[in-house]
Image (cartoon, rainbow, N blue to C red; front, side, top):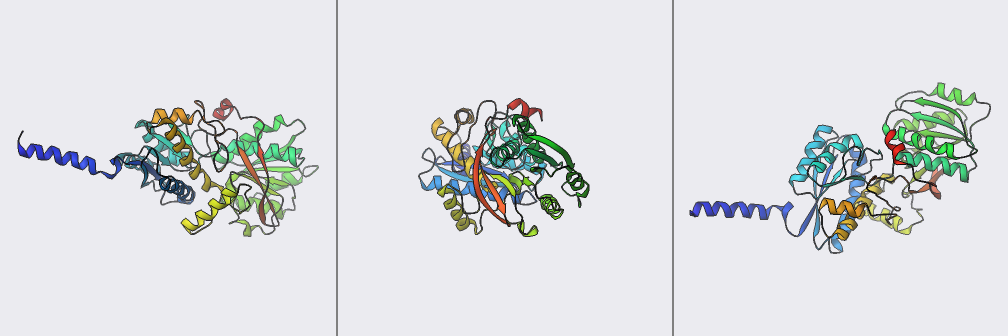
Length: 395
């Protein structure tokens, strides 16, 4: 063999060996998430939580005796860039690809992972599509489905607050909002004495919902509860207008309005309830969650903004457990272990995955009550039965 040929082979082999992503003592975790654009506000907090869990695992000796190495690519809150970001982290050797919170913006990167035979996790997407139906069998979400939120709040209000008459008010802006009301629609017929006294829609950017409020006020009796299926930023305006009109009904919402950062816009808000996976208010019944909140602030310089921080921590936790049990990062083996998880304990509530659903269609939620502008945990609830997969997929 000619010397120049041999040197070329050795140089190529050396280059492969020295590629950081392919180091024998590392497992690469790729973040194809938004470091710019509006999705950054959703992705970064959950990503920071994921990085905290990665650091904890590394300090404890790593995974399979190897260190976890995070690599990053910015989706720029753009679907085309999302696909490129997915490819970029895969090119760096990612065995796990973590994608944006939203299905529409996370799916392009997750599809690249699926095509490459790698596991992907959405940071906090709550659409059934963010998994098997929309991506494929190697895709998961770490959060709890939006319909579970609507089902949780209606069953809890019926059982614990004696709510019997409900008004359904849907913000038709997003699939997430619709999902909350889908869960409410599924649960309400199961509550024997519950009655839907009215239903209406609006759009998130509507400056006024005066006509919807007029229809509520024209009812013979004020409803016990309003199921308000909305999210920021329009949620603030809707809530403010409902209370300004003198309507005192319980307002039930989804997790998308968790956080006290917006409440100065609705002074003295009361009788307002949301479900959360963990409390950012320092009053979580699990002391370890409160400890995590402190750690998050130490690491990032700020308090967790809402419960959407927590799924980032959970996804690393359950994936790492599956890798340990599989004794491999091979996607098929890891997925098989994930699908065996049934009420798997995590810091933010149990997680269950099956071969049919890679989401939570039943989950424990803390109930946060806001009174006089101050939110606090008052209860916890798990819906009495799982929402059927065929119902979720049909919506």
